[in-house]
Image 1: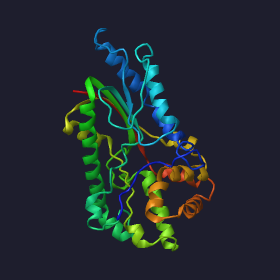
Image 2 (image 1 turned 30 degrees about the vertical axis):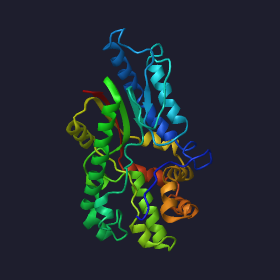
Image 3 (image 1 turned 135 degrees about the horizontal axis):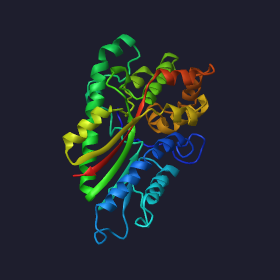
Length: 313
């Protein structure tokens, strides 16, 4: 792409804002509570009374704004209110820090995979035959970029945490290494909607071929391997769960699901394609025009959320 992608969620308080379309993320974030509480108890029980600070600095390492960021701090405070009289949320480097919590953002890549952009290889080719021929190359390029980004993330967090520090992370993943599930569900949906818009002449195919959704869903095995190879943290616990129940509850209608897609992807879509979001929404809603079709599609697409608790070595 000619310009650098600026990844952020839809701002403000409007109908398609992240603040009003993040109940699913909140439900997933709540699944971190028990691990955050366990990490706080472990920090306190492994330290003598004299070594515990009067205040414990907490960093919420998110990529957006809204009520979910505050909820992370509240959850941490609930874990041990006597020893957490204040909490701080931050999206910039914070040091020293004893507990870091991150939810729903590490699956976002820092940039589109260079192996694809340099060689002008589409991430999701409209031609199905060409797409299947390149599928391994595309997935490997995404996996390579994720490995690079996540390794750097671990290295930087290791520098910021104090001795005995903990980190609890949550991100979109996948349950297995089956090749067809390596694209995240939402990324695949966006690509498919855009491909229909190309076929209808709404957006230019050249523009479509040069667009890359910067999201990758690792397996739990892949995440474990990267953490162990980087070497700064030990894995205290890793959980994998199916988010479809929360998704069906929070995003029960096509219009609500389209609003979520807009909240997540509108900034990068507008940056690349221009003013196309009204047509994007209409195309998406046509996709699920039959009653029950949205739920049926979710049922056919197994997904996973990964939650991991880490301790600094």
